Length: 225
Image (cartoon, helix red, strand yellow):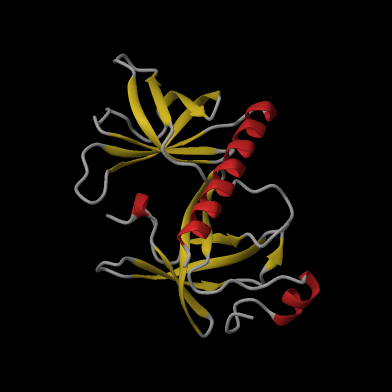
């Protein structure tokens, strides 16, 4: 139990470990768009998470917005319906949330994100030259990438993304969800694109994320004294 967030009965019947501070969590802001975050602190029923970089500037969400938060113990996922009740105004940026319902075990497929550094090619339906970018992460329903040359894109625009996933290539017909200026003074933009993947493409993405997670885990183990 994390100070009242995860009821004891759920933890016992699911035989899982509740998340500790520092655990990666995912914020399900809309279908196909979930952003990686991290549990920062717990204070009674309230808890704070790191504000996603994609929307850490001028807020796209208002206090009172409701969405699911989930984390992924081995072989399952725990979903916690939550409500945004506070946003910090200074760095490090944090969101304060409170649960709106009991945490539940959810074994349905969720769009877990992962991967970084792969090449991305973007072809907008509007006229213009293709743009090369870098993958920040990808899921079965969305891709987040960085481009150093801004594109004239708006929410709802259609764009084609070709993403190099190891030895394979995923060609995705996407809709622009978010266009943000790159953080930390970097040039260009961060883009969040959503798509409906065929099962063969979704499987390719799952395999890529799994391989990436294994590589990340091995690197952390090597760096641990």
